[in-house]
Image 1 (cartoon, protein in one colour):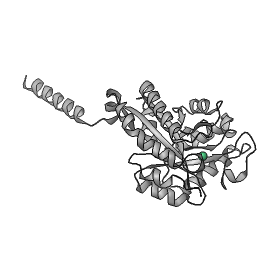
Image 2 (image 1 turned 30 degrees about the horizontal axis):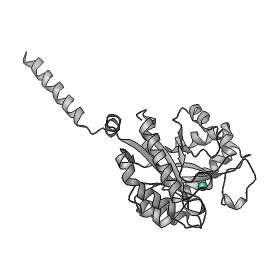
Image 3 (image 1 turned 120 degrees about the vertical axis):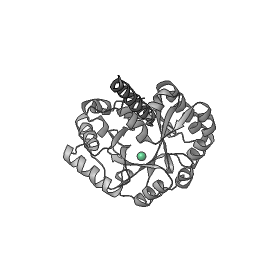
Image 4 (image 1 turned 180 degrees about the vertical axis):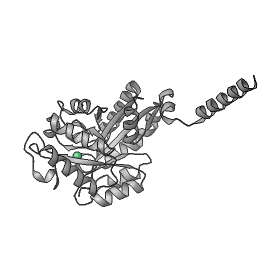
Length: 267
Ligand SMILES: [Zn+2]
């Protein structure tokens, strides 16, 4: 009897300890908190519009930094110092001819072999060691190539990194590639400056739209820009939309948090 009693006490102790372990993911799943990641593309370049304003925002933005351009290293360092997350903004070729200068010096070509593409990613990641994942700069050609995208996603997975499809073209092959890699498909829900509309009002509107998507499916991913595609107006729109997003029950998190939860099938 005494033995049974001690076994019972032992079991209770283990149960109490187990319950006391902070399980953050479970807490998310049980709370009504909806998650929003805001990626800001095009850090690193010579166009500085909105860079300071974005880095000063009091939220964990995800800064997508272009490799091998004027301010790559300093922007990546400043972003981390400002409490932001850094990902590689990997330039990939379009499906139409564009000026080469739009890509920066290192980009994945439509005709690259899988090994060449992965080697380019490695060189870019060596330049931006702060990166925890990657998304796409331009890329409407490469992202339609399922084999190449499968190789890229597998390569990033092996490094413990995630890949986010910026969906710069509707028929991207990245979802199929992610399935092939047996990994969750992470993709952009809204652009804050779609079709070149980079006004303050438009960015506010699309942030709320991102909030509504997050309310519905548990999370959402928005992409805005520094430089000529967006800049200070987008930064001001984000700052001014924070109270409304909070009212909607939306929490802004680094993209890696959503990626980790998707991996565990929690959101
Ligand atoms: Zn870009």
